[in-house]
Amino acid sequence: MRVVIAEDSVLLREGLTRLLTDLGHDVVAGVGDAEALIKTVGELAAQDALPDVVVADVRMPPTHTDEGVRAAVRLRKEYPGIGVLVLSQYVEEQYATELLAGSSRGVGYLLKDRVAEVREFVDAVVRVAQGGTALDPEVVAQLLGRSRKQDVLAGLTPREREVLGLMAEGRTNSAVAKQLVVSDGAVEKHVSNIFQKLGLSPSDGDHRRVLAVLTYLNS
Image (tube, rainbow, N blue to C red; front, side, top):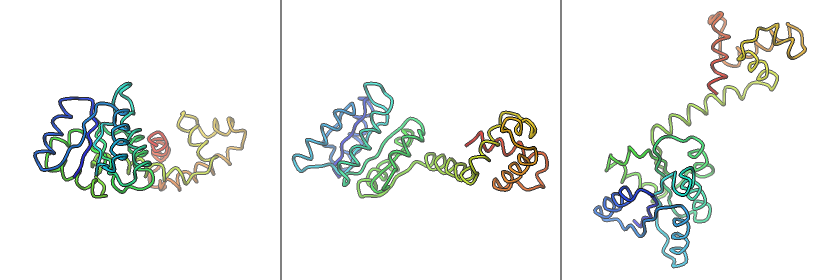
């Protein structure tokens, strides 16, 4: 498999190159920033020698914020046949979501700690190069957790969200009614609907209000 590595840490870049080369893979280029990555892949494309997979750090020079993942997203759009595996120090949901937007074919997102598991890392690179997916378990857990929370709140009407937001500020039903210029009965109905949609049964008693607010704050 033909690989391009984009990593600003020379030590890690050389280590990945040595690891993949020793296992019989061809590391055709190693670069230290996103601009060089885009340029290198473009040059290889012009030679009809595209790599099978690009392994890139999420954060690279000059700002060390999102250059790497931006380059990865761009490469996926311009060269759909290339696999893209990004490495990150920790889970960054926004970047993971952006990378996975659209097709998940030939894409991977791993934490750098996973590189220490040599067999697991190499298997992930090969899988992505072959059009598969390689997602770190931590990435999956966080994305699924956020999705579940969003889905729950998605069932609320705009007015119910507004009521829940005021509840989260510690307001009583009467205070919410005064803020929204509606009757206490209207607010009580909204609160009842919120409890029902969030799956909070009457058996939860007075804790329902706290649980509803926690769901809102964690979303």
